[in-house]
Each structure stands twice: as structure tokens, then as C-alpha cells.
Length: 518
Image 1: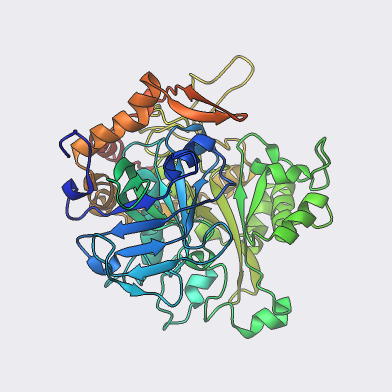
Image 2: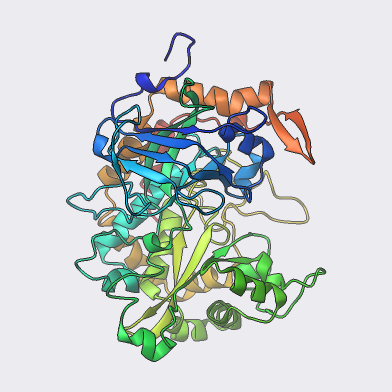
């Protein structure tokens, strides 16, 4: 800490990277803060520069001259501290200049001919991160330890890869392709600072995670993966068009998200197809295609096929059991479900779930794969950031606090999902095999190394304390500025129950009682 009791870049632990975002709006407010005040994720704000420093590995340092930022997330916009996207291109899509290997003052470095950056070097057990031009800095506001979201994503990737549970693109990627192909984000703890100009002292905003952004398609194997997307079957079966798709489940409240509704013709009052309230295209996220969806002139064929089939099995378990392999990779689906059981992922059986479609050339089928995303609400945390669920919760655990005489609310969202109900009833042996397959590789040592050592342990208690004051206490006691309908006013936020520090003791207690045997 500096002489004013603030966290400074010079006082940080040697192995804790940081980024300084420099930029000022016309009103004199730092760009990072003005973006939060405006609270509109569609707006991109040009910045002067971004300086990333990793003193433990200076070769990874970079200075970006130009570029822009925007807010990221949907529910997170309700929090006083926001998530940020950092783009190498500015708001006009003009690429900035990125210098790799500069020093901690941004001096030196090699100008990259291709304006992209790979944020993780290759290791003995993991390939280099794919170079991209956009990243996400996650504030982890709803989960104060900063271990759940990124830690769980890394856990899933490593365990599935170790178990040989791979998507078709991961199976068929060319052996000489030098980059990691994932389904979940990668990332690591990072401190975020801001300033108006390069001559100003960097100001601490908070502890964050430096993550892949979900829009970077190559990271997740959605396009241009040699050994898969360049094969002859792409031309023979799909006319040369990439068939890969990915859809995000947007809301827990609509029946279609639980496969209880399959009407893709229904319209809302504004004439927009109702299904667009349930699903959003993650890939391809194409403006022309999305406009056709909104106009009702195009239907999501792969998505519609799966939703209609699952709905058709609502009262026909035998059909579900016989035909599931024609629609899903069964083992992969069981793996996903068992992860949600083991770690108490209460908000990832509808909302915060991604469903990707890849063609499996070995089976000559277009199959669906569930993908983990936004893993804050695990290990007893409810989707409002409050610690509410015991280690022994299961699919039928009732949330007595939220339940009313008119409606029973279960801890796990998607309690009545046709997909998960049928999977539990028709594939108990396969689910048991999935548990054994995952647990054989998911040792306590691995779990706590990821959650503790790689994630929460990177931040000392002083950082947790200052971060808690900035994110939770000050917004409650003093409030923060928010632009509401063109008027900037001070708004207070009450999220003190989400202020839980590193949560290490609770995490160990929750997971070893006895490691969620299910």
C-alpha cells in the first residue's frame, strides 16, 4: 500500500499481474469510471492505452496503444463494480498497436504485425492460448473469492481433457496446431488500475480475473480449427459452410429453457419470436442472421430440432433412452450433469448454460454438447450472491426463503427440466459411470490447487479487505454515481451478504463432506 493507504502497483506481490487502463472522457472523468456510470454495455469507449505487467514473466507484458473498452455481462450490470471487455481495436474497428515484452513503464517491446495477443504461454501440459484481440476482466462481484467462475472453468477443462471427454473439434484438431482448444474460459487473477493520462498515478479499481471473452470463437473451437473445419466432410455434408453453432440459455423462467415448450412460431406482443427471449446466438453471432431470426424469416434448425425432440419425450422415457445418442453425446451430457451435482452448480441447468452443436465425423451426426459458463453460483452460493445452500443439497432441495404459498422454488434452477428429469431416470448407470470417471481424475489436491493456489490464494488478506471496501462497503454507505435517463445521481447498493472474502475455510468444509458423494 502507498502512503495514503491505497493499493499501488509497486506494492503488489511479484506473481500477481496487473493492468492499467488509461483514458479520459470529455468531462474529465477516467474512461473506466465513466463507462460504469453510463452502465450501457453496447457502448464502446476508446482509450489511450492499456499496460499489462507480469513481473514474474516480463515476456508476457504488453502495451496497447489505442483500443477500447466496454462493459460486459447482463445481470452484472446491476452491480456497482462492472466487468470490462478490452479490445485491441477501437470503437471504429481500427486496430491499435500492441508492443509485446515491454517493461513495467511500457517502454520497449516488439510491435506485433498481427494485432493479437496470447495471454498464456505453452506449458508441459497445456498448449499456448490462441491469440485474440478481445478479453474479459471479470470483477466476480457476486462471488468475492474470485475463485468460482474462472476456477471452475479451468477445472472442467482439465478434468474432461484428462478423461478423454472431448468435443469433435478437440478430438480432430491437427496435432501440429499450437493453440489450446477449449469449451470453457481460461484465465487468472489480475489487478485492475485506471488513470486519466500516462502521467497520472494509477488508481486501484479492484481485483479481477483476466479471462477469455466468450466472443473469441477460435478459443472455443467454433471456427478455423485445422484438422476439423478444413476437412472434406464440410464440403460434402454442408456445402462448404461451417456447421458449428452455440446457443446461450438466457433465463430460468421460460418453459422452453426446460424443454417444456417447443413452439418456435409463437410471437411476443412486439412481433418478435418468443424463443429469442430464451436463447441467444453465441456463434455465429451474425447481424444478418440475427435479423432474420428477429423477423421470423429464419429458424434455428439445430436448436429447434433438439428442443422439439426433448419436449416429445416428456412422457416417454423409453423414447428418450433409445434416441438420446442421436441428439447428444451421452457421456458428455452425463459429465455435465455430474459436475453440477458435485459442485452444487445451482444456476447452470438452464440459465448460464451453453449448448453447442458440432458435427461428429466419426458418428456422422450433428450432436449437442452442454458447455459451462458463468460459474459464480456454486459451492452453496445462490444466484443473488448470498451463501444459502448446505453441502447436502440435491435436485429436490427447496429454497424455503424464496418459496411462497403459490410457488415452490428449488435450489437448483431447472428442477422440472424434461432433459434432466429423463436423464436421471433413464441413464442412472451412465451417470454413475460419469461420477467415477470425473472423480478418478478430480482429486482433492487438484481441486484445492485450482480454487486455492491458482485463484483465491493470489490475493492477500489486505487486497481482499480493500477490495471489499471498494466493491461492497462504499456502495452501501456512500453510494456510487449512475446515469439514469440522462441524469447522474448517487445510488446506494446493498450487497453486503456477497462480501465473503476468500471463502477458503467454507470451500474446504463444503467440498469434503464428503466431497459431494452423489
